[in-house]
Length: 475
View 1 (cartoon, one colour):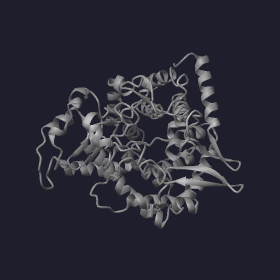
View 2: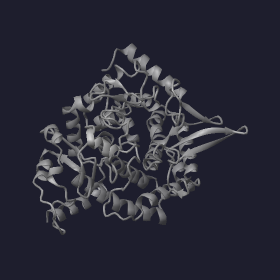
View 3: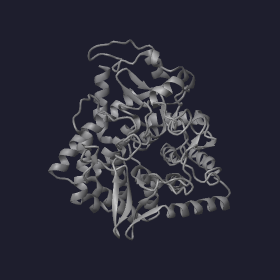
């Protein structure tokens, strides 16, 4: 399937050339890839290597037998983890990984300069960097068998620091991870403060990765026990309370508010009037998805793509829910895929809601950027989810759509418009994760065995506890 063989081959060849051109060197060692190579606009921080951006490139390098660049990246970013992080007189958490880094020269010597959010627009601390780093370390070990790297003392310490940062007791009663707005791929204000789905899916995958990577022994065994406890309740919490389909929508519509006590059905005090009108029309008869956020009297009914796709890939969603999410994507293809896979969230927020949620952000106007824009990098996660659920025809269909425009449009960062027909107004060209996302999608479709690098099976260790929790709820 796909484009004509010659044209498709040329596109892949050109994409690989662009990826090669994006590689950053520290001395003579490759250590990452720049965010973009758009030579027509000011670089700003697009000449840096972002941890989240590098993931698709790293997986591609692992697949193609070039693991050394991934190993170098893991080593150098781990070294940055322990750096002092002075941000306007405030210290960031000790286990924090940088959002990005850059190789700089001074007095004839190179050094790596990291950004932990102190230079970012809005000064947002990256919560997802340490989670992606853990997931990528596991992928490296899966690809190379080099478990010795992960077992080195400095790597074990790095893993533990991340776990301490994520598992610390907070003023929060939920198993989900509480984060501020803009702390992940959606790195500008979009009304996602609290417990956004994307972070919970990455958190779940990172915990499962850590469990595989920790050395047996007193400290490792203690953390594995804590991880198992957190994984079980997190898994149950997301599947039980974040899930939305027509049946659940009807239940919420008939909720009673102000319920007190352990027997409360409406545990988060969600008011039926908060169900948006668009959802009553948009929710298909068959299919469903995980809500974007959940908290006291708050359910974000928007569809967030990366969170739902990662929930499939890491088995945070149940087998039935995974199929339902893909069913919904297939039935709402025009809204979520349109002319470029795929929309980062749906629908866009508009009018007064846009002013309040985004702070009148001119980059996040309706159907642009993070507010309903289409992001080609999401192609690889869509393909991975389609591959895992056995819906490969949707993966090929998405790749074909992307191939029609990516090269012609010079590999942009994102697309604008309700159906993704316009190249993003402020979109950088030759965006590296757009290039790598396309190549990775092709590789995942050509060889499903590559899924083992990023995918997790249903966790048998949790099924007993999930059964107990379900029985307790029914009782």
